[in-house]
Image 1 (spheres, rainbow, N blue to C red):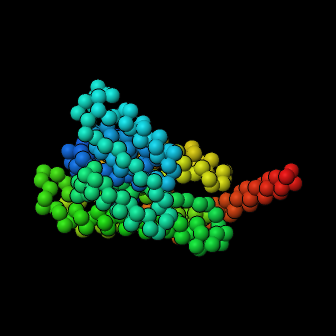
Image 2: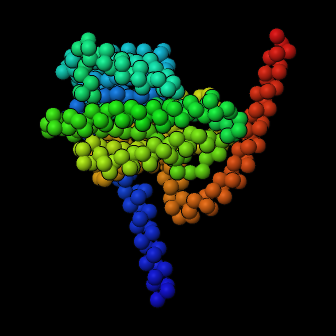
Image 3: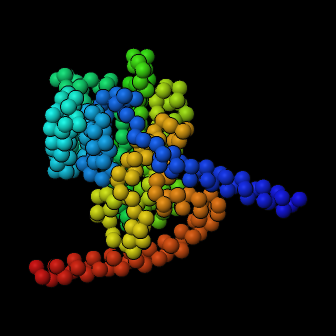
Length: 348
């Protein structure tokens, strides 16, 4: 009898692991991109839209004839992306997009680590509306993609420096921007016919569910995003608004350009995803199959399965040993940097 019960528990556990981790990928594999313009409308906002996942999102939206407002603090990259979009998708430059003569690509140069950034964005949108470039109520697609990351020990930065910047950019800005558009959509939901009332897609991270040494604030902020999306989705269903949060592992983006080149990151490169891989998920499952959280990439899936089986406490214990290794690796990195700086001073 005991053997039967253990076998039954094992089978149920296996079924849940498959349903939660394998089945969503089958949905992605066998699904095609949804027409966001037909489903949600003609205007979209993409934060962090100048590179990586944001740039890939912009191209996917533009290919569907959706007008875009791209936001980034990197003005040079932002202008480059806008030029690419205009050349590839605007008007008759491309035979496949002959009906895109009305498509518009707007850029706003903003640093979301600034506490006034969303207010500045809203003022800019109102300026666009005043000049009849767009109607704010027509913006029904919001990609909360922007992110800010530093990789250090918790004690190595002041609260009012990178810690606060990460909280501001990764959580407060996203919450404020979501609040602004969510209220508009709810207040005007009866004015939209034959379309969803809106969609909000969050670029979260698998670090949001894992113990993550040396990026404590970043992981905590991503955890907030995932729970925020999950809880908001329950209310959003009543208002016909779709919500999705994607939790990737390491993605080939500029986010990692200015952090230490640790060996653990080189290990994660083995599982690294391309931005298009993440964007495929966003466009194929948003508002479908009851999926609100999606673990993107092999590392994210393995991590989630391991966490489900062994639990958070054992996972945390394993992370402790890994963090001890990272600490040594990070110390070497800092020593090398200090030596280089001292040599530069001598050369001067």
